[in-house]
Image 1 (cartoon, rainbow, N blue to C red):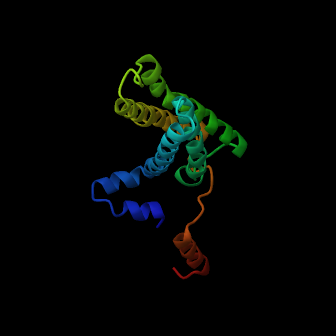
Image 2: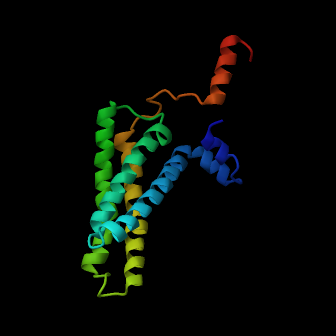
Amino acid sequence: MSLGETVISRFPEPIRSIALKHRELVKFALVGGTCFIIDTALFFGIKTVVLPNNPVTAKIIATLVATIVSYILNREWSFRTRGGRERHHEALLFFLVNGIGIVLNSAPLYVARYLFHLQEPHVSRLTEEISDFLSAQIIGTLIAMAFRWYGYKKWVFPEQNARVRRPVEDDRSIEEEKELGHS
C-alpha cells in the first residue's frame, strides 16, 4: 500500500471511499497545500523584508519558487502515471500553464492594491495585510488552482497510464513472490 493510500485508509467513511476514488485529486491537493505554505511564507517574507514597496513582484517570486516545487511533486507523485509527452515538452507546458496561473494568482492582489487602493495610507496596515492575504493567498490561489487542475489534466499530463507506475516497496515483494511462484 502506498503512503497516500495508507493516509487515506485512516479517513472515516464516506470520505475514505471518495478520497480513494479521487486519489489523483487528493494528491494534487496535498501538493497544492505544501506549495501554498511555501508560497505564503516566501510571499510574506519577501514582501516584508526584501520588497516592501513591490508586493506583486514579491508574489510573483514566491509563486515561481512554489511552482518549481509543484512541478517536481506533481510529476513524480500526483500525476506519476500520467504523461504522453516528451519530458521537455511536458515541462514547457507545465510552466506555461503555471505562468498563466501566476497571472491569475496575482491579479486579485493587483486589483485590491491598485484599483481598490487597499494599501496604506488609504487603509490601515492591518486592513492592508488582511486584504493582501485574502486577495493573493485565498482568492488568487483558488482561481489559479482550478485553472492548474484543468490545465494539468488537459494539456500537461493528458494520458492516463502513459508512464509505468513504479512499484513501492510492498508492491515489489508481492511481484517478486509472484515471479517465484510463492503466491
